[in-house]
Amino acid sequence: MTLPKNFLWGGATAANQAEGGIFEGGRGLTNTDLMPIGEDRKAIAFGSLDNLERRSDYFYPSEEAIDMYHHYMEDIDLLAQMGLKVYRMSISWTRIFPNGDDAHPNEVGLRFYEAILKKLREHQIEPLVTLAHFDVPVALIKKFGGWRDRRMVKAYVNYAQTVFTRYKGLVKYWLTINEINILLHQPFVGGGLIFKEGDNIEALKYQAAHHQLVASALATKIAHDIDENNQVGCMLAGGSHYPYSCRPKDYLEAIHRDNGEYFFIDVQSRGYYPSYALKKLEREHITLSVEPEDERILKENTVDFVSFSYYSSRTVSGYDEDYATTTGNLFKSIKNPNLPSTDWGWQIDPLGLRSSLNMLYNRYQKPLFIVENGLGAKDVPNEMGYVEDDYRIDYTRQHIEAFKDAVEIDGVELLGYTTWGIIDVTAASTGQMSKRYGFIYVDRDDEGNGTLARTPKKSFYWYKDVIASNGEVL
Ligand code: BG6
Image (cartoon, rainbow, N blue to C red; front, side, top):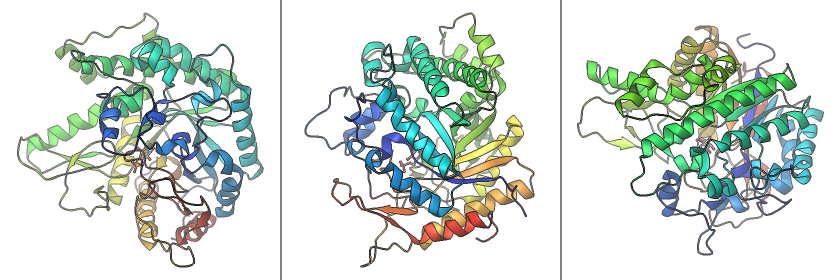
């Protein structure tokens, strides 16, 4: 048998794309509640459009999402039927602290997640909980300008401490900040940053990054102090960079671009700023505002494991030539002529997952966890409402084969695998419902119409067999 017996097979969702119910249970607004479907979404994500008030002419997909707020229990029953060993979810910060830094937590919010976590435990499903999955309380964006301000550290750490304390014994695996490198690409989504004319955008992003890194390290410390069984991971939007050709400049560019993304994980895993990052800051005359204790905090509180999302590799060149480009998770890439693409232009590269696992394991020598992977595709239910998603099964099978080889042949230590959007959720990039990843279909369209009924797809039954056989039956 290739995979260890306790391998964590599972699926993932996030509060902002699944829950809805944004005005219920005393919840406060968060950054993703302000991201409409349509043209302005990108500018808002990049922090170039100030949009802190909700508008009646916008449609906000997160407002209802798939209404998991009211469907959580039946959804968990379905996950249990699939035989999931682990379920990755996120806690919505503003359900616990509606303004992000209230004097007392909101008991309704704490009870809401407590019931979910207990239900998972009843089904022997291990929760894997992300503290902030694209989640910056709007009140703190208004008050502090988001993560550019050091006071965010205190607010986040207090939130983390509150949930670690309350859910002690219910949760063992925690992720501090989802796809932490998104801060560089979509600063509003990752850090609640909105830029004004004349701002030094690069300096603000790295200052916000420093605050997140310190906050993540402090949360890691507190998690360990509260319960020595807690395992805390960092989370990277993964996918290695390929050089477009074997020309040396292309290869060097690939190394530089990898460094650019791994910067966060380097700090969280090794405990100090890598020299290439210090040089970059120096070169660009960016002086970070740092507290004397920060160096020690980062050094002493590295993560227990490294988690990442993987949708594709990326391709880059060191030459300023005219290449066809393609969209991918969070940022553009040169189109790799050797790879097929999804309907949304994301390139499909299962072997790239094995390469990424090797690269990350060599770099950090810590257990890895693939916490997102999947195919965003249009599903068309038949007249019985059933989706025969063989394309999704093929995609997932190829990626599972790739990580099995990484474990068996390359010796990578891998804790588990959670497919993204195990149940259809709204897409983070576009807000669309029609970009579906799930093994469970949700009846809802891009305009918010539909019964919200849940129906297992063909992939549901396939994945059930995969899990039951610990990945032997593919
Ligand atoms: C990752 C995010 O960026 O990719 C998820 O962590 C997101 O929240 C996923 O949904 C897939 O991206 P998209 O845009 O297809 O939903």
